[in-house]
Amino acid sequence: MSDVVRVDAGKDAVRTYVTAHATQGLDHILRLVIDDNFAVVRLIADLTEDEGMTVTPDDEWRAYDVLKHLSASLDRSLHRLDLLSSGRPFENPVVQPGSSGDVEYESFRALRAAYIDGMAEIIAVLRRADGNTGLVFTADHAQFGTFNWLEWAVYSHHVHTHDHIGQLTHIAQALRAS
Image 1: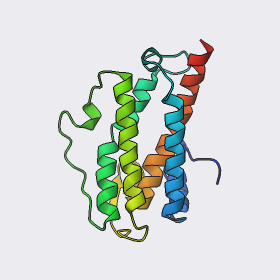
Image 2: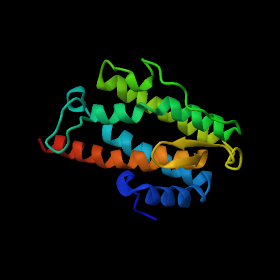
Image 3: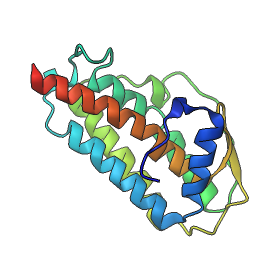
């Protein structure tokens, strides 16, 4: 299973991929999440403020936009993973103005730091978790249905992230070529 399913592959393909990886256990999932996080950080680490804010001919999004999109759900994901992995139910909070998705960062550098810190917290939750606890508790995804916390970790921080690793790769290549 070397090819990561794309989010746009359809519900059945995404669910099949997520389930196959989730059943391989927490250590496997943790490796996927850490590897993908490392890939994102590697792609953004050396970008200057100007590069992070540049729209390239290869993509309508800037690196800033990709990171903002990935960062928008980190707080909710952290809360969901923490609750479900400790055997407690999760309910989506009512989104209030000024929630993480609405945050405006003063710079690409600030956004990069927020993303790195947010992912460090998510990885810490996964490292503390017992891969057998709380698997009966689930939370709904609007497009892909119900996931337990292991499946959420695979989906949110591997499948979804991996789509954006490809996007960041193209942006970085275009910035280097210019």
